[in-house]
Amino acid sequence: MDRSNIQPRRSLIFVPGSNPALFPKALRSGADVVTVDLEDAVAPADKAKARAQTVELFAAPQSNEGVERIVRINSLRTAEGLADVQAIIEAPNPPPAIMLPKVKSAEDIRVHDELLSGPCAHIRFHIIIETNQGLEACFDIARASPRTDSMLFGGVDMAAELRVQPSWEALVYARARLVHAAASAGLDLIDVPFMDLSDQAGLEGEAADCARLGMTGKAAIHPKQVPAINRAFSPSDDEIARARRIIEEFEKGDSALVVVDNKLIEKPVLRSMYRILTIADRIDRSG
Image (cartoon, rainbow, N blue to C red; front, side):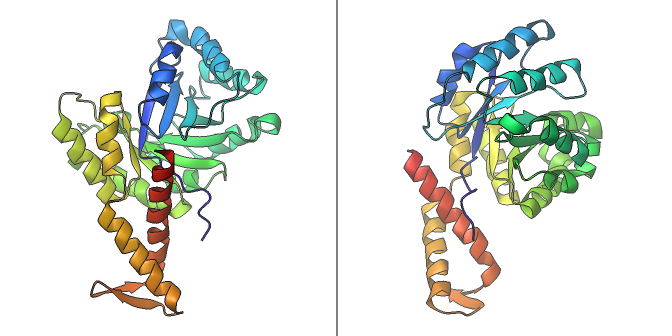
């Protein structure tokens, strides 16, 4: 099993592109992913300045302390999105990854793939699904480019599209459909932020529910949410020990079935066990 593309994406935090002074603080927050936002977090009058400041943030080589860096651009269907892509193409040191909002079809991804070629061919994609069209096409979207590393569930916009409140019950179908699509394509799936900063129990409960459903991470709106999110999506000591026992039993022979802790385990489960150990190892190495 190729484990080179497995890495922790338990937590993601946004930084407004209009306030680059927050970028170093976000990098120290403990989040696995830091996203500089040129879209929702930036007022229309500040878009051009935020774009220039974000390009400047990435002008120098980035340090490697285990934090993934992304820039969320505006939709390519808007003038601001076109300007964002043009700025990235012209940048002397483009960001390592971009987040694509309001993706509605696989063609949206293929257009970005073509535009960001040549010197920008290294740029990875992270895709937000937040519309009914995107939810319907999510399986094709997930497979549209080998440059895609994760999908994100834009639950607030999706709730508006579905004409429901953004409650767990109302959005569980959308989340489950995206779990299916992301897992089928080998992508991570990051959940919408929990918007109530005063409700720590609610955050912990929703993060745990997302992890049980098969999501691999959750976005945060404040650094104080990051520790709880990281705990929810980190393998426990018991899960790590069990994964090691299962892998050891399968490696002893060539059987398609083993018995571990009095339970019959089939060989396809190995994929999940290797993922648990890889995530645990990379969390440990990143501190």
